[in-house]
Length: 307
Length: 262
Ligand SMILES: Nc1ncnc2c1ncn2[C@@H]1O[C@H](COP(=O)(O)OP(=O)(O)OP(=O)(O)O)[C@@H](O)[C@H]1O
Ligand SMILES: [Mg+2]
Image (cartoon, rainbow over all chains, first blue to last red; front, side, top):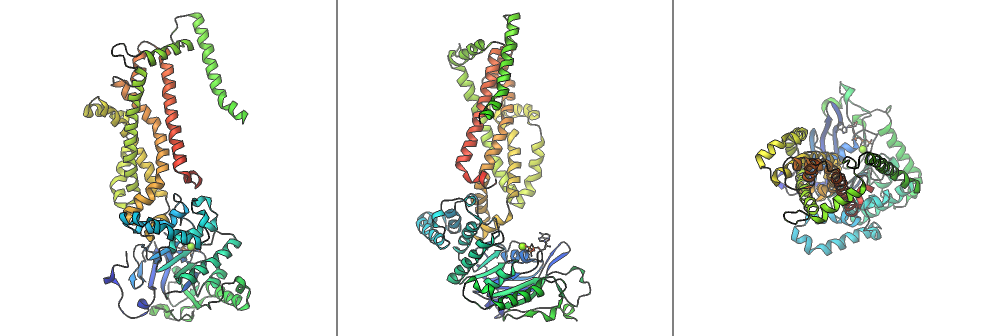
């Protein structure tokens, strides 16, 4: 829906045009509670960007803004250079739950997007093609033989695999995921992590992945972003301040083996981000954040930047 | 299992036994007693009602009464279900419709339908339309309210998800939400059948020339308990069957509903 509205799209040749997702000066305020406080983030095409942060810091809020489920109080969000307004098919979403439609079978759930986007005539003419494509995706998520089942007949991990197939078949510009594996047991969770990496490597899709699990974030991402309200700045009324991006690191893309989780450097990075993002007593000044990723940028107000 | 069945049947057995005993005692006192007729008399009365037919035109009264009543009931409740579904769906989903219709429907649902029966008979006449309208008005607002609440209780994630799959607002309403509301609608209709029978019998009692309600109130004049009691059972049986039918239909058609926590 937004993609077609080209007159609104950014034309300047900066990050906002180059990158698939561009967020600048974004504030989200509920009543008088500031949740997101001048957030800036630019994510390149093909990146697997993971977002971590303490519980309630506003990760899901940020994701909802990108999705178009809610509007920012102030600031701009751009997908492919176009303002991210109401939700549309350029953005896919996998929630922790409620991603699948309970009244549709596995196959119908995966097929749904294809059908909705087709005209009535096309829907009948291409029925077979669509179905084959959907079965192909079910094959990818190893659920081919379960195509006739309803979501309630599947385990949590299977449900999330269907939800991923349902979103990926639409080939969105960016796939948003909000703690998709949060409700799964550790074993299933690990196999789902390997699985999503395989999907990402095959499709080279841009993924924006919210989790509160640091290890998961470091293992999956090519870039990790920490959102947190634990920082200090130059503003006088410090009582009601929202979360900012306090750390932003590129991650080396290694083999998909889960063995890397045992490596020392892996643990060190986790410790570092835990301190920078999750420790209420570790208050870095806004001008001293570790924003190490090439695409990261900061638009501080003069007041914030004061020491 | 056996004990369950026994407990299930026990109240019925006690009631029947009590009736038979009381009836026997009264008839022993006065063989012409009409209040608690013996079973044999009831069977005879219902046989005559079912098979002998009307003296004047030879129609089978029981079949005709039943069909007339069921027709009114089905048209009334059926149209209430359709209107209630559409109204509830749109009010629940679209803020504009909500502003327009929500308080109005709430207000209308409080009006006691029987109180406006005279108005209906004046406006629509004492024919079929008045009676069907009473059933319709008596059930449609509650159905609409219930569907609105159901739609509002769906997680917003579902609508957003549908939009990300390329659905338009109308498609979301009619292809995503509507099918999920259907089993709930059937349950609401099942609950509405009770009031619907009430309105049917009331309107037939007041102004009608056929129907089960009409028949009961007609034979009441002759204190014909021997026909009234079987008729009550017949109506109960019809209500029970409709309920069972709807339930079985919903279970078959919407297997995901109960199991996914609907
Ligand atoms: N609609 C809303 N109205 C008012 N406050 C809200 C609303 N949505 C979120 N909040 C508040 O915004 C803050 C951030 O919520 P959010 O769900 O984004 O956190 P989160 O980082 O995703 O947390 P978690 O890790 O627990 O999922 C919370 O304090 C929450 O109470
Ligand atoms: Mg969250």
